[in-house]
Amino acid sequence: MERDSFIFYKSFYEAIKGMPRDIQGEIYTAIMEYSLYGNEIENLKPIAKSVMVLIKPQLEANNKRYNNGKKGGAPVGNKNAKKQPKNNQKQPNDNVNDNVIKDINIKLISLVKPIDFTKPIYYFIAKSYHKLFLDINGETKTLIEAKAHKWIDDVRKLIEIDKVSIRSLIAIKYYFECSHKGDRVDNFWTNTIKSPASLRKKNKEDVYYWDMITKPIKKWLSDNPNKELEIDRRLKNLNDLVEKHKDTNTDNLTNLKNKNN
Image (cartoon, rainbow, N blue to C red):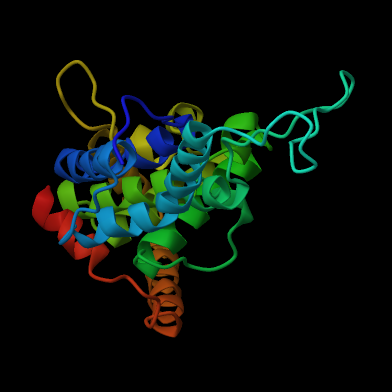
């Protein structure tokens, strides 16, 4: 089978764009090889393979429709001929596979436990920040539509690429909480940061926002030593929670991402 074109969905792009560039390249090549030539690429890296598992059913359905179209429909008058819908009837969209699209666009707000191919600790940190921003900003469209894979991967990047400690992420979140509750904390950063991705933004001097926040937090903790104890308690609770979910199937996904970054 060989085709000159195929359908590429926005949902595919949304699921892929936050991944490392080399992984994106593998996935895009795999999609094109399968859609245009019917070829399956072997030895894909785990993350690329996991995405293709979700996307492949939609590609197969599209290829099947394409091949059926080339063969032609039933002759006019044949009882098997496809009945035409009435003008006021909505025709089904044959190019949409609801199960696939839902799987690769899972909303963070809908998750109640870690998902496969994700380190539980990244999930719990992403989920806790998401809940915090919901408490601060309410159920905005951006937060309701927030994609799980994007938020979780941004937490991974903060930890693995930017080398932000887990304790620091807990401290930043706690600082935001206290600011929101009016605990004599400057609310500038609370109003500026809306997601883990915001923490990775840089100012004109090329300094990360998360790094800029550490200075006021250090002073805040110095003035309130009891806050250190609360951060330690939260860190322990997080570790205990992660331990309960240590069997979640990560398939070396995050370790692979770390090597590629």
